[in-house]
Amino acid sequence: MAYIRAHETTAKSRGKAIKRYEVIWKEPVLDEMGLPVPADPAQPSGRKKTRARQESFATREDAEARRDELNAARHHVTAQSPSEMRKLGDQSLTAFAHRYFEGLVGTVKPRYAKEVQSVYRRYVEGSLGNKPVAAITAADLRRFRAELLSPRPKRSYDTRSAAPAQPTEMVTLARTTIKPAWECLQRILDLAVVDGAIPSNPMLSAKLPRSNGAASAAPGEEPFTARPMTAQQIGAVADHIRSELRRPIDALAVTFAAFTGVRAGELQGLNVGDLALGPMAGSGGSVRVQRTRRPVCGSWETGTPKSRKSRRKVPVDGWLADDLRTYLASVHPHGDELSADYDPDAPLFPGRHTRASAVAAGIDVRDPATMYRWDVPLTCANVYRRCLQPALVALNLRHSRWHDLRHAFAVMSLSAGEHYMQVSKWLGHASYVTTLTVYADYIAENEGGKQAPLTRPTAPADRAPAPSNVVPLFGRLG
Image (cartoon, rainbow, N blue to C red; front, side, top):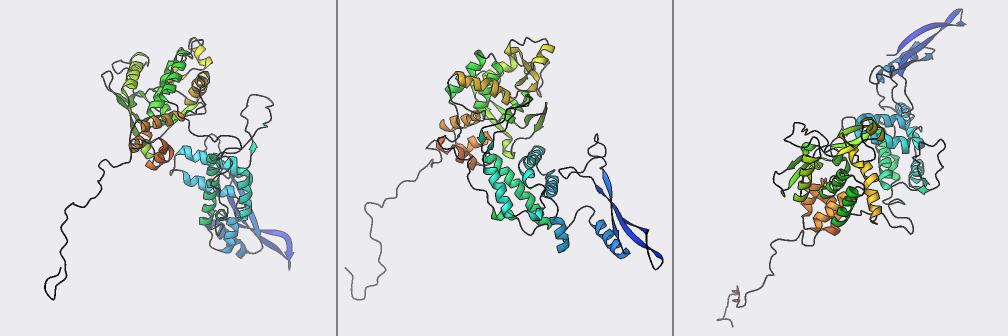
């Protein structure tokens, strides 16, 4: 809280010392992102660092006015006058970004909040972060838009070399990267409008184009599209991973992903207890998708599926259920329900030992089939890099992403005659429109038609003439 301290100066007037009135208060120390700095780094949520500030006034009235102003605006400044609007407008874009990030807590998933902050630091802060929010013009936003859309040197991920090679290849940001950065800036400026720092959002006059260089292919290049594999190709890939690469569980995981349509994070989040398999050979089953996992800094972060409709049950065909029953009973150490070691919370598909951890555990590192680690889930990125990509190259198949396994499930199901609404539920799409938009070309022609079509209307052959409403005046008509 601000207070006033009076002191006498060395200057005199009419033989008396002239007094000055100092307004003293404390304000938090902020880092480069505008966040309060904790006094104890070991307790980030504890007491924050502060520093003393003071201003000197010639009269007590001026000092009291400044003191009251500071005390009224201790936590947040609200614009109620043109002078206060100017003070708010002088604050940097990063200060409003911090307030926007604070408002995300509790309203979105923590992962999404971290991604928004990461997008702001990487793409927005360097260009506009230190600029006063009231000084950001439409011309600044057009320059920022041009930076996002312009080619830039390809990012290097070489962290081991003392002097990594300078990138020479120029790339254009994908629209899935440009749009989040643009929308993040738009929401921060919307917050500045609501707080009264600026009268309107200048982004209204600078729109993001519907397509850019990343959305369309470069001259002479084919645009990237989904490339789902056929059932025969998936079988060949799984057989190569099983026999040639000697990683049979990874082959089963690839087959499972291709014939259930689960996302990578959902596959990593599956536990043994999420499977419901019938006891009889040849009978089908189902898998319950209710969590996701992703590797973060050497550990695993557990979250929820992408949307509410992503919590779902997906049927498992009989032949795949047979493979899973054999896998759980004979291979998985915690998968047999009749065993004392059964653990429904164990990861369904295991991860891999590192070379160092395998040597420490006494495992033969020369045999890939013995390198599985059952206390952690598999990493889809590792299986894609070590198994799926080499198999595609060895079999002379075109390049596919891991997500194309999900596309393969959708395409095979729709081509077999499954209704698109049912496939949409199995995929966990938030709307049927998404399924129609992405897979319209694969929907069977008879889907969506009327099961009981109406017949063509025909008039009866011996139709009697309709009675006339004309009253004859002189005898009978006709």
